[in-house]
Length: 204
Image 1 (spheres, helix red, strand yellow):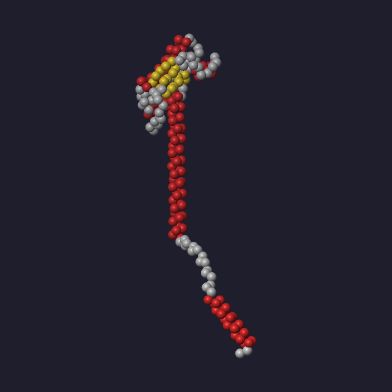
Image 2 (cartoon, rainbow, N blue to C red):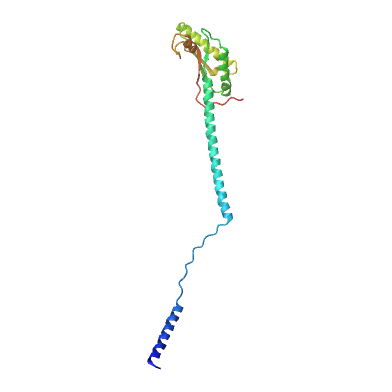
């Protein structure tokens, strides 16, 4: 075999070995993609139902709080109205202790509240205008307070719950020597004297 032939054979063998080695190399590993968890319709429905239940509870709690707040506001308003009714003033004609029709209407509005609150006590204060002597006006104011007390007593309010006092002309609510001022000063005023407690509403 000639020298060139031997070289050819050796070259061919070398190529075959290289090729065989290449064939034996392990192919690179293919990295698997992370598995995506499957979400079925039942899971979606459960999540939706839970969210709906939370929202329903939130709305119910809010409605309950609103109801409590409204009841408190209404209760405060009713208390204020009853206190205002008890405080409404009765007015008298000049030199007179007779309760007028308008005065009786004012007193009649107080009676249901007084009857619904048996522990409630009040003070009735009689007043006059500036005309007349101080002694005469004290006596006239006392007659006015007693007239009011008697009216309430004859309609079921115990007399021992009503204190009648006289201030005569000493505490005018309007200044001036004219009828517009005098008419406001001829009056009986009312004050709650029992401890401050929530008033019971009169029965319908």
